Amino acid sequence: MSDGAGLPYRLNVGAVLFNSAGQVLVARRADLANAEGPAGGWQLPQGGIDAEEDPRAAVLRELAEEIGTDRADIIGEYPDWLTYDFPAHLIGVALRGKYRGQRQRWFALRFLGTEAEIRLDADPHPEFDAWRWTELDALPALAVPFKRDIYTVLAASFAPFAHNPK
Image (cartoon, rainbow, N blue to C red; front, side, top):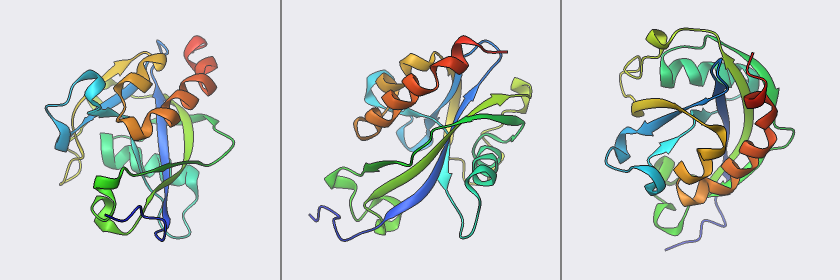
């Protein structure tokens, strides 16, 4: 199987959505519904950037598509693009086989809505089947192995938002 070296990275945004208690929203991928804890079925909302779309607009659009609401303010942004490669078994499979991985711009956001507004079924093809609030430093242990390094960076970089939740 190819290592994907000749394939591009997909431009992507990610959301670290904080509640008023300083916890972050994680959601369980519907295609990994039986994966718990270290198995990596949980992730942060993320998604592709459309052509000519501003990443700040894209992260709010992705929240609305994936969790049913964009009731959030952007409160921080990781200063660099973060990149991950898909593992060999996903090269040529994930994202219709067109990419080797993803190049991501990550944002910290403060959730302004109510939990009743979080609707994973808002999209006709939901990506997630469950969600919960968790501690920021728990993110790396919940992630699939190929995303753990990025989640470790985010947990360290966005820690001030968890410690100053209001």
